Image 1 (cartoon, rainbow, N blue to C red):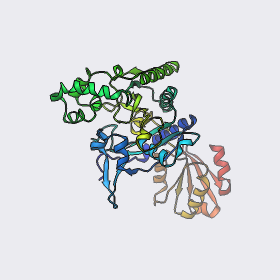
Image 2: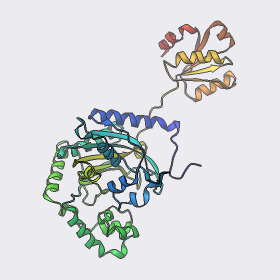
Image 3: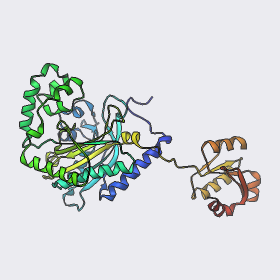
Image 4: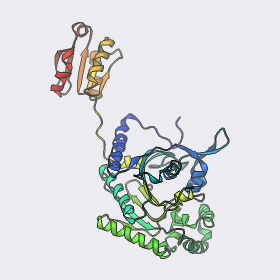
Length: 407
């Protein structure tokens, strides 16, 4: 039995995944992003320091264990920390293009539900070394372009300014004072968060905590001039690009490394798991993980949620079904030739011709190539057009030219 929260991706679904991955590479590379692939397994400390020890991810969702050398390692729960680690380890500060994207699996021990699995996949991008607000707007634009390429149009964009290490401590103090007044009504997790990272309470999905948070102080009232001006410029760029958005003063994201501008793209088509994509700026993360002070920004989109929202993908058709009446070697020779023209399925099971024609129609093949002892003897094939049941006998050497005519 498969593990809870894990899912097989079956052949009937794979065309959507191929379309998603192809579209992502097409869009992201058109904006100058280059693919990076980082290990699935990293040192636990990377995520504790990067994601934040007081986050739900680090506290209770990571797949962490000791390897044989007694070192604590973790299956990656998100992509940014690993890309930042690779950026530092490989000394990529002076590389001409510091724009990266990744596609791959992540792991979190969450309660499985629609749109949320314990092994899930993300498409993400990271940009390093650009402090200007224009790149924040670019990140949102790239995200929208990807959704457009996938024919996903039913969504809203929420944005917020969550400050920086300069102004956030004062806001945290105000939050702590506010939530202390409602301590008895907070969930157990938020009671713990209150003294470690009160911003996390704003992200709690508990109904009581959410209701209390609605009247909490707004971070926008506490941000410093630098954060305020940066956020103002981001909005000006988004307005210039005619990208609609809604400001949500309680949007904080679930990862501690974010600073200044953050955003989420949401839909009401996925129930409770309505966030399709999210991201923002993290100007202190590279330094926090031991690198040189370098700004950063990025986003990640959940592949499973994108798949749910995408229209049905066109499946790649089987062009040829070789109805093999006991001449395996000849069938293989034909397979070698016609598979260069289109997808080909050769039958090796002992079936009657009637049964094989039924199977050819079931798999929606375009043509049947019928071969038996007579065809082998004469180096011929019978080519049947399954769309109208017409057929003709061809010499083996003429198959390719004749099929191209029919196609």
